[in-house]
Image (cartoon, rainbow, N blue to C red; front, side, top):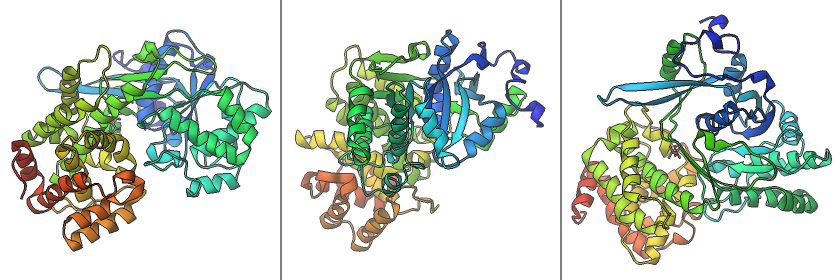
Length: 505
Ligand code: CS2
């Protein structure tokens, strides 16, 4: 398609009537939010809720999106005046895939941090900016996942402490941006993490203050007293956009959209109502403001992300490429349901009004959504960063109460098994994880020595992931037969044996 047929401000009026689009004056939009890490998730989640708040008449909340590494999002969206399509996908009563399209107008400007780090600091310092939000993934906090502390020896932290004018980590950008903001006499900010970390606001606060203390202790004191770091639970399944999605959405629009985002209809966002200045009314888009996000985060990280990762490692090893394909296999479905009901739910705090049985049923239906094609390998990435909050908290709680951990341990065993880099159909894949080389070496040693309490304890001794679980006898005893069974009999037979409660050979 030529540029006249590219989605942008000028072609908005030519879209089919069925496509929702901004009805407000985009030129009148101020930039109230700077977002670091403008990936698909944020564009299908926070930007959609912000769009609803803007559409309700509050034009203060346009978004400036920053890519921390690559220029691809900016390259796709700048020629589109920041516009992109959100395609909400599911199946109708007959099981036919369908989608609802909405063009989102909230993102006005895009920056690529490595091209112009100063522009990012200026945006954080700008007077209209009141909120800086982040989706930088777990590893973007440069922290130790087991302890939660900022790693001063992390290469990005080391770099940023030495390069105040050209930081490359989100934490460095925030601290130097705030330094500039205070120098200009502009007021405090709300810094809002939207990543899948427990107490994400507190993790962010601790990392920012640690970094600021290294830079200038008075700055750290000022940030601690002025800025707010609300915790939040975010939930929407957003698979990576494929070329097929681009073509399909562009066809439906009659205009080319170089980077639409796909999402499920489900949306949840529980955010603590603690803001340094004002904030959009995100309830217009389905968010809820809460006093304490912790019980919501725990529920979501353990039930959704914990089972998602379990399903992803088991499914990927069995050669099941997508989540709906995997959950469609009876032994896996039975296992995931029992994992929630028997091992995860008993560790959750009570939440007024929450019906766990419908939460579980609804989650299984979300996984079965045939229109998303969410890849198991996508979820499997960055396991070292994800396991602690998704699985190990539940494991710790159960071990402390001397409860069995068989189904939880199966997820850990499947993750280890995944480190072998080839699935049961003989397909090899790349292990995408910042700790990939140490972890695959450790796992190769286990394979060479044979699975035994000793070799499993060597894996559990990997402190950045397992922390104080190193040497845990009960966990080792649960892992040894599961890992052996996965290696010898494969995923399906192991699942069937666990489901029957049969001893594993
Ligand atoms: C997934 C999450 O990719 C992953 O690791 O588990 O992105 C998940 O889809 C979302 O957290 C759902 O809210």
